[in-house]
Length: 236
Image (cartoon, rainbow, N blue to C red; front, side, top):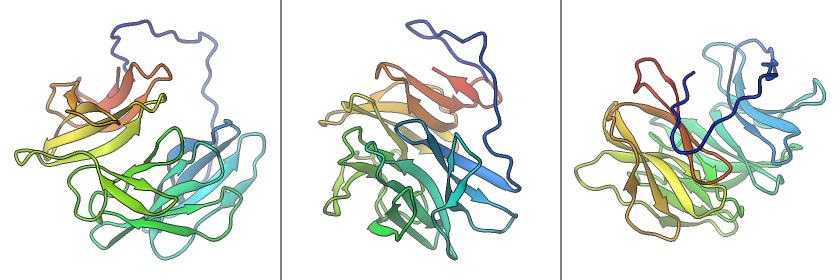
């Protein structure tokens, strides 16, 4: 991967090593660390055609715990900031989309809200754990869900000339929301907007694909995956 350097320096540990975390058959995707860094939740399907379900692996052992099951795929697990629950999307494109939560030790799932059945398979917790950014049914913009009471508030408004907003990511200080605005199929850019409201600021002008978005801990820089240099790589 390539990292495009912007303002500020990026250091790399010369002793860094890649250590396989899992070696399961099939496909493992969408990993998310627990807040204390001791566990990883991810979605796994063992065979092509199987449905994805959410699993938790403890870093200190080989123990693997299956949290979800059923006839639909469970995707996009996101650990709550207090570590008490994992939100995820029960998703079958064009058929259904439901935001649920489950305790990381297992147990019954809790329905939080319905989501968009075409574009609803990504979530983001606010740092205070009070809000989930998601896409409600038939929403082109990004919405805010309050898990405590199930209330939904529309947040970003997509201009008529644009297609949709996706891939929300709260800054660690809770003040901003990064997201991807799609102008057309395969044509997107990175934007950021204050959580308190205001006009979104466009950060990139590539008009190419953006697949994934994350904040650095300083809340001043974003890292995203894009094909802006040819093959997909990481840019800052």
